[in-house]
Image (cartoon, rainbow, N blue to C red; front, side, top):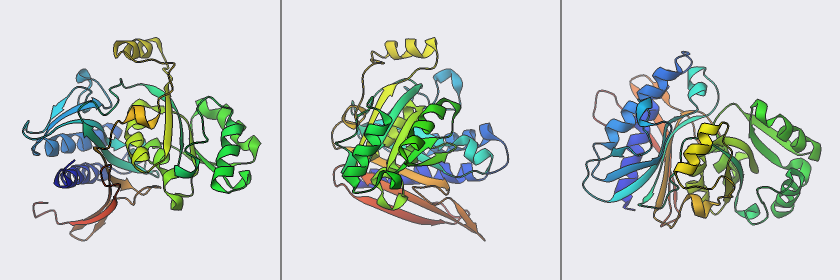
Amino acid sequence: MDRNLALEFVRVTEAAAIAASKWVGKGEAKKADGAAVDEMRDRFNQIDFSGRVVIGEGSKDEAPELYTGEKVGTGKGPALDLAVDPLECTDSVAYGRYNAIAVIAAGSRGSLLNAPDTYMEKLAAGPKAAKVIRLGAPVKTNIQRAAKALGKKVSDVTVCVMDRERHKDLIAQIRKTGARVRLITDGDVAGGIAPCMPESGIDLLMGIGASAEAVLAGVAVKILGGQLFARFSPMKEAHHQLIKKHGLNDKKVYSVNDLAKGKTLTFTATGIIDGPLLQGVRVTGNTIITHSIVIRGLSGTIRYITTHHHPKMKN
């Protein structure tokens, strides 16, 4: 993928992050989400490319979400598939909690899993433990294998899990092994990528989260040499039907190579509120400061970009 296009996507996530940041702690989740979506859609439509959202958060009838199947861009230039979340961790922004980002994953046509907005069970690890984990293996086994691969004691392994009632038994199993648990209120995109970042302090991600987040994280994890396994875990019959409609198997375990094919991939995110991946938006006087990351599949490069925005000038 063209480097310039990857940088254009940074401008998209920056705009969405800045828009969402204005709603931090104000208790208005829908307004925060709507502001981020509007900015992301508007910025996409200024870029010369033919984009298609293959996995987002919503359907055409659930505006303002960027819905699965939506076309963005000017229609000129390369044809790309997109996985998007203009505001990952809506409640974190609404209630001023930890960890929120604006995020885009992109690839050539047919490279990203085209899936409905539902739930998936996930297991992620960084490069050192990528080959020893298995979704479906006992929790204890995965933690012990990861500990050995990482050269750690089990008691020093940290597992990231979303703080949900559905994870009560999973958390108990992790604690029984002696491993550490890092609970997050939202945000398993950053949680899934974190094991690939040694400085994050997170070694594994476990639990059930949204399908869009599996693809988004999967792109970055693949480029970084880690592994993310995911299997559909629909919560209701309507979700079963959506999965079937997409021609997908809710029994299959998808690896990063199923979630994202080839090397023509990019992952772009901008922090809204501080998290394990990025710092959030800062406002100092008349300047807005954003912190972003761009990961490119073709080169394997990781770029951290700090941008100083002057609202009265065109960014």
